Picture 1 (tube, rainbow, N blue to C red):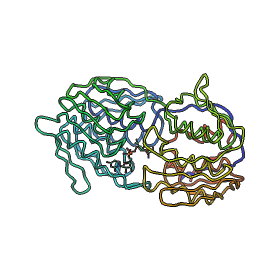
Picture 2: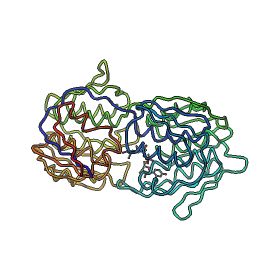
Picture 3: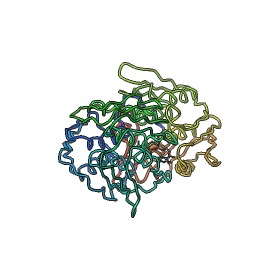
Picture 4: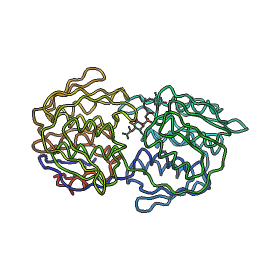
Length: 419
Ligand code: EPZ
């Protein structure tokens, strides 16, 4: 397993190209199953999670034609057979093929995704949404079995118990094939949900309100060929904004959109970081001292859980104590003991972490546990004195395109050692 060796103390300076959003690319790849006509996705990020999703739809008979930062998906010959467990075990987002398979073929068999490092991550809300549209849903031997009525799915009101991103996407995907109108209430408002809706509209679907808590879908119309450009990845952009802040540097994040980072931008500014729209993207600079800032993770537009670990690394180097509360996932503090190995002073109290910054960080070997925790350790290593070795870097490659190369180009001293 590869490892990254980071030698800290370099101020980062330069431009970073922000790639297409992983969490939009994954549902949009699944969306190709809805139609017999080809779907071309542009600005496709080069990530192992994208490879996993493409391999999965290919196992369902989709013809996959990849180009530079793009893919054309032709589901004309696709079939509705079940998704083998290994793909689903590796990445829970593969459950997103459930809605499209049910919508297109009237039935679906998908392995029930196990939990993952950050929490149990059930899919009960996905299944309730499909039942509301008329599907018979059952669980058997670790498989989800879903069957549409002979007359097909029908539009309905889907009320989500919580604004789940995945459940909102499953409901929207399936609703495109449900005759009549579907109303999704308490929908997730993440930009990736709105981007999926834009992709489905390009395919011919009638969807309004995506990005708000109430989404309306007029279903039952056949979907056609489409091209869609994936929006930039706000989590990648936020990660590099922290890289600029933690090294006291200045980065221009080309392609990043400030409006998608609003709550993160506000927290960074409160910490003494400057952000402004440049001519090619978002400029992030930190010149003065870092101040402690309290944050609570929430569904969009609140502070994103996917940037909590990165912000904690930053707060570990600020002058003072900050309180970081995680309300979205039940176990998303596994980076805390690893940050402590670098000298961070963090006390956990249930869903809150008190981060006492001020003392400098010192390099050490650390272990990545999940995608965002792994990048938090690289960020801490950029600020630590000496050498930090981050192990299990495959977590990083799931969600960050060429992270080490992008940072080295801005002055970081990082070496990838094949493991
Ligand atoms: C999406 O996961 C993202 N993944 C996650 O990013 C992100 O952290 C999460 O949304 C929250 O923003 C993709 O989009 C592929 P949820 P998802 O359903 O859809 C509970 C990353 O690092 N829940 O909004 O799985 C769930 O347990 C990943 O890129 C249910 O109880 O998140 C969690 O506590 C990590 N029942 C909360 O809702 C359900 O049926 C939010 O989960 C579904 C979810």
